[in-house]
Length: 164
Length: 303
Image 1 (cartoon, each protein chain N blue to C red):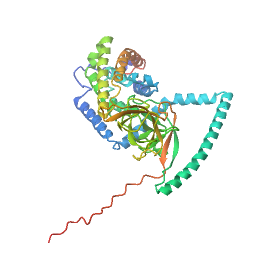
Image 2: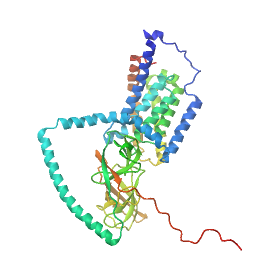
Image 3: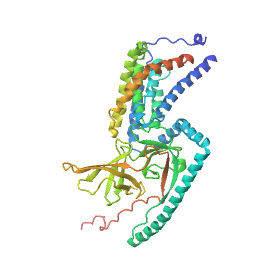
Image 4: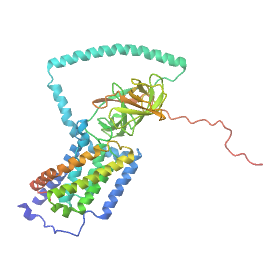
């Protein structure tokens, strides 16, 4: 009984973090700041795939990615594909990445973020949206630098609500 | 406390891999198939409609603080400011009414002249006001979200205007909201006419939010900065004769076949909040099939 309520609350915590990431992804920013928006959804995906791989896997990632596509007006499946690749690498190596010191984890996130950005850039390039090539790499830096903080925040949430 | 009751999970180092190869390949294949069919617009309308309904609450949630702020500003507005605004609006209304009178006379004259020239009547339509949702989309696409969908009669390819010029066309019409591509989106092109000379050409979107480029203008064409570009209506999407952009720069390089011309959109693409959905008066008639004047197609029998 008790375990069930905890379980349900845990589910809601996961849903809430994804929802927060989606909200932040479309939160209106001034035009100059738009290209610098961190990839919140990518960070959330990496975190849950890293620390809760038996609960949050590829299917969740795929569904969230499709929602992201519907929100941003990109091609259906574009963000889903990029997130899937990131999630796949994270799931494959989650036992190793988990025990890395924080700076090594951040470097891993840098690599994953490069992959994510590259896939988006690649698909957009095929569609003719290849302008602003330099600006595309800005979120890579910002998202990577945000990782230690996002990780701390999410692990606090995870401990507080016993999400496992 | 509760942690004691939690089932102990064995540290499965080598078993039950959550990133199974089969599942991964399957999902990636689904993604690629979705992208492939979505690229050819019109194939995934039902999925888009369902998804747009699903994400509408998220968009509303993001939009809510801005709507609330606007509402609060209305409620808390100072009386004198309201009176001042009212006076200004009344003056504007008067000026507009005077201009409308002139327009009515001109329209009559235009119709008469068209009759004399035996040209078809200009299509006119009506407009419906829609509001932008304060949400951001992909920073490399010029897509905006409006608060009207198929429930208000919005259809894909519908033109959007504001008080100054053409804004864009509807990309995806969901049940409650729609995504609109601005004319400056890199995937968009609009048929325009040079108001001064009647030169017909294409204006395509590019890197900038407010600027269009005209890549197919011959080097010796009569075009100069300050010229107004209006929609020609040839594509059948946009109402004809509505302002689109003003030419800002003409660079002629004798070594190249075309001049480099850029134009600044006249619609308020960057800061606008209220847009007009354009409903054409008549549904565009299907193209009449060309009559075949040749003799019978049946092969003549050989004797």
